Image (cartoon, rainbow, N blue to C red; front, side, top):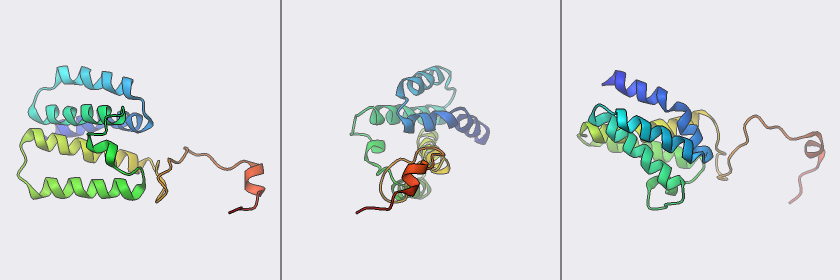
Length: 140
């Protein structure tokens, strides 16, 4: 199973970041393509979680993804909660795949350092203040 889990994690590594950036159509298409190829319950659970993420980030706030505060603290807390839930229950292969997709998504966003610690503002990648902004004094 670890080989299949690793393959899914690698296949969707970029898709997790695309999800976070709101590139839902491309991710949705990749998930549907992978769903046709899903050979076991673990993969089906993993892909079901991804479909839910796409729906939630598309504006359906009934799903868990839409409720996670977009801060580092929020994502770390969600990751901890997923791991605790998975560790506290005997999971079916489907449920194990579902939980793994969530942890992989949260790990990918956290590792990419896209979240501010508290404010909930996404950090632009490798963007530094321009000369004008850097020379301005801070104003309340």
